[in-house]
Image (cartoon, rainbow, N blue to C red; front, side, top):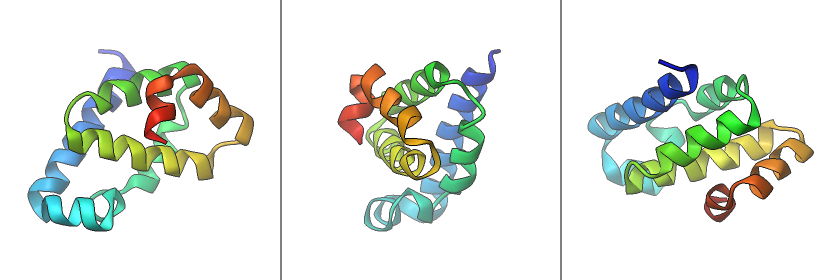
Length: 101
């Protein structure tokens, strides 16, 4: 299994576990960072190339409404963590991610 596939599964699994433990209200009202470690996940995601980041986040976003909301939160976190030109490239290369940001 590819590393990007493993990371996709990790994101969905951690989201599912967070929702089970804290509930949808906490997730939607307070944000993804309240039910899972978005900062650590962002840091780990930065180890991937832009094409892999795009693939991972696009794949995760199609899993559920909550997963789409998580990807939106991840985009905000990536915006703060990435060099501006690298982040801009994500938006240019992926209409889906651009729409979620």
